[in-house]
Every structure is written in structure tokens, then in C-alpha cells.
Amino acid sequence: MLPMKRFTQSILLLAAVLMMLPVHGQARSLYVGEAVLIPGEVSDAQALLNALDEVLVRLTGMDVDSVTETLDLRVADARALLQSQQRIRVELVAEDGSRIEELRLRAEFDPPGVDALLAREQLPRLGRERPGILLWAAVDDDQGARLADSPLFDQALSELGRRFGLDLIQPLGDATDMALVQLSDIRGGFIDSVEASAERYGAGVVALADLREDEDGWTGRWLWRIDGLDVGVQVQGATLVELAEPGLRALLVSLVDRFAITTRPDGASVRRVVVDGIVEPVQYAEVLRFFEQLSLVQDFRVIEARERSVILELNLSGEGLEDMIRIGRTLAIDGAAPDGSLRLRLAR
Image (tube, rainbow, N blue to C red; front, side):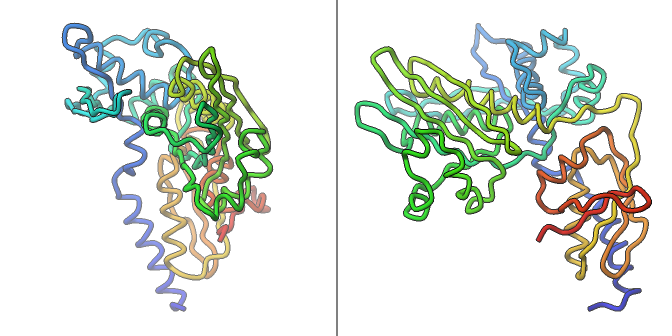
């Protein structure tokens, strides 16, 4: 173990370096929207608004036809928030299995500017702290019941995961998985029986999708559990792919309802935390990196570094610190210290 003086100097140096790092890539991706460009039908200006709309839905979960229209945002507002834009071509699988290209506008918006907009509107915002979602999907059609195996459905899940900012994890479906989860568990909505599978994939939420074809089209039931609360939604559509969006949109709304924060328009609040159980500099680095990446934390400073703990002062943009810590799973909450500080420890 390092001598205490060198140990503390190492920690303070790490803190200085970490606070100089740029915004994390995952955080930036939440503020990047894509919109289809159709010559003669969708102009660049309208595509820019559509791209901003995608970002706002991802952050707020608002289930409306157009968030930008609801907030009365114009093209000029979108351009004021714009950091960069480019045209891209995305290769997709068509219904007949062929490959097609889609022309899109990809626009990156200013994170502080978008957050300030939502703060002015007093809209709750889901930050980058989002649990991994292990999705077990079963289909039942004229080929029988099985785990979902449609390339078009997988493509829809990937695209919707990007659009909604959901970290979707699809199980391998191998022997280890099938020893933990039975097809009947998914179709019956027995979420207790599948929760153990989350540990294998490091997921914080388990979701089930039971999707069935009948003579009138497709129907389905989505079910998930967040903090012990089971939530579900019934969906229907003409194709299997059409069942994906309403299910995942409802899941996004549930995450917003549980974990979203409302940023203070009048400035930050200050919170002191004590993190115990640290014995190596690399563990200090892990703790500092954790707080550097929290969307609630505007900045922080190290107050004191002891042999097995560190005291930090956090400047917060809103409420919900405890929820963000629980989602991150790096730290565990031990309660309040005598001075009112939040007492934490490394979770592993």
C-alpha cells in the first residue's frame, strides 16, 4: 500500500485530471438525433426539427405526436441548439430480405442548451444513467412458439433502442440461458422466474415480450419490473415489427417516471458525500470517474482523502442523486453521516 501522503497526492491528481476530461461519449449520443430525408417531401429544415424531436423524446419520454410542436419550437430554435450536422446513408433490411439505403440527417445538439430548455419548461429528464434492459421475446406464429428470431424484428429493436436511448440486451438463447429461463416463463409473464438471468448479462431491468399471430394480425404483451414494480402494456399491429415501438416507448415512459430528474432553472445545489471502503488508488479513480459521469453532477471537488475513504462536495443540477447512484451499481448507499453527508461504499 502507498504511504498516506503519496496516496493522497495521487488521489488529488486523479481528481484534477478527471474533471478536465471531455463529456463522455455515451452522454453525447443522447443528444444526437437522426431524421429521414425524402427529397420533395421532407426538407432539411423539417428534418432538423424531427432530429431534435427524437432527442427530446429520448430525454423526456413524452408520448405526443411532436414534442417540438408541443413546446412551440421553431427551426430557428433547433439551429440555435445545433452543434453539427451531416447527411448519412443507413443500410436496412427490407421486408423481402433485400438491402436498401435510407438517407438521413444526423444532428448533434448542445447538451447544456437542451438541458436548459427542459429546465425552463420544468420537464423531467432521463439522464445517461439508464439500466441495461435484458429483453426476452417469444413469438408464436404458424411455425410454432419460440424465441424471437426475425431479422426485421431485431433491426427494429436496434433502431428503437437508438431512438429511445435504451440499452437493450438480447439473450444468447444458449444452453445456459435455457437452463435459467423456459419459453413458458416468457409467454406466461412469470418475471420472477427470469430475474436470475439478469445477473449473467449485467442488466438492471428484465423485460418480457409475448408476441402472437392470429387471423387478424399480431397481438402482444410487454411486461417489465423496475424497483419491484411490475408494469405491462398490451399491443397490436399488422406485423410483428409493429409490436416493437409501442412496447419500448411504454418502457421508456416507465424509466422516466421512476428515474427522471427535474433540473433546477435557478442554479445548482450542493451535496456532500463520503465514500468508504477504498484501499487502492485505482478504486479512487473508479469513484471519481463515477461522479464525473453522473448527469446530475455539474462539477465536484475532493474535500478530503483519507486512507480508506474520500469526501466529495458535489454541485448538483437537480434532485435524484440516490436514484442515479442505484442505477450506476458502482456504489451502495449506507445512509446519512452524522453531519448530514450521504454515506456510500463501493458495491464490489
